[in-house]
Image 1: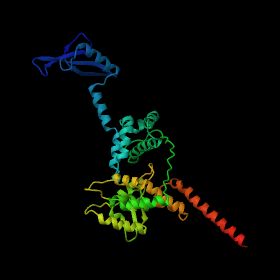
Image 2 (image 1 turned 30 degrees about the horizontal axis):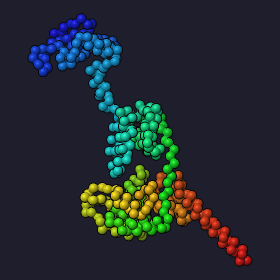
Image 3 (image 1 turned 120 degrees about the horizontal axis):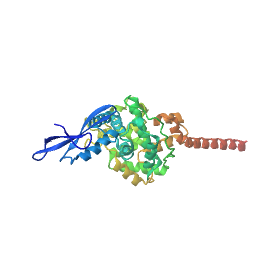
Image 4 (image 1 turned 45 degrees about the horizontal axis):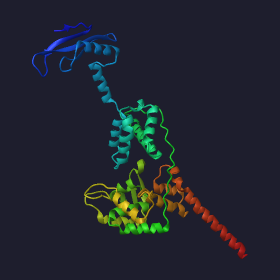
Length: 370
C-alpha cells in the first residue's frame, strides 16, 4: 500500500526488512518530466539510510535532469556498451593484425598515453584540444619521436575502424610533429672487421646469425624474427618478406653469403617449428642479451641500434659504393616511400663526387703527358 509523506511526490511502501526483523520503508518519488509521469524507486529506509527529506532532494534532481532515472541509467549503460571506443577499437586492431608479433612498444604507448586520455571516447567525439593534451603529456620527459609514434598509433587505430566500416573517423586531421630522426649508422672498415670477428666468436650462434642476417640483407628486426623456412627459396635464391612494416609482401634476392648463412642456421632448425629463428624452449625471442653482448664486445657506439643499425650499415655501404641507384636501394630496403631512401642520397653523391674528382685527375695526367 502506498503511504504519503509531508513532502510532495514522496511516498513509501512497507516491506520486509533486509538483514533484520520486522519491516522497513521503501521510498518512491513521483514526478512529471517531458510530459511523462514517472514513479522512481529511490531507496530503502535502513539499507540506504533513506529519509523523506533525502527523497525530496533526489526527486528535485530527477526533475532537473541532474540525476538519471533507473531506466535512463540502464539505457545509458546499454548505449555505452555498444559504443566502439578507442579502447575497444585498439583490441579489434590487434585482433585484426595477427601478423604483428611484437606488440610491446605499441601496447606501452597505448596504455601510458592514449588510454588514459582518450580510451573511453569514440573517434568522432575526440576534440583537437584533447589530442593537444595527449601530445603535451607524451612530451613530458620523452622525445618528439615518442610523441609522433604515439599519435601515429592513434591514427592507425581510428583508421582501422573506418576501413572496416565499424566506426566513424575523427572530425579533424592530427598534425604530426616534425622529427629530425634521420640516422644513418655506418662503420669503418676496422670497426666492421671487429664486429664480424665478435659475431663469429659469440656462443649464441643463432642470435649472432640473426644479427649478421640484418647486416647482409638490411632486413628489419621484426622481418627477421618472423621469417619462416617456407619463406626461404633456395632454388630461386630469394627470401620472401611477409607484410614488411605494413606494406605488401616482397621478395629480395639472397647473396652467396646469405645462402651460406641460411645453411648454417638450418643446423639449428627445430622440428615442427616453422620459424628460422625459433628462440629457445618454443618461446619467441629478440636475442636482446646476445645483441647487447655483441655490441659491447665490438665497441660499437652507445647510440648504435643493434638490429636497425645493421640495416643502416647495409644501406650506407650500398649507397656509398656508387654502383647502386636509389630506386634499387629502395626496393632492397622495402621502403614504401622513396623519400625514406633519400636519407642515403648524400652518400651516393659523395661517391659520385669522388668519381668526378678521379676523372678530373685522369684528364690532368693526360694533359701533362702531352
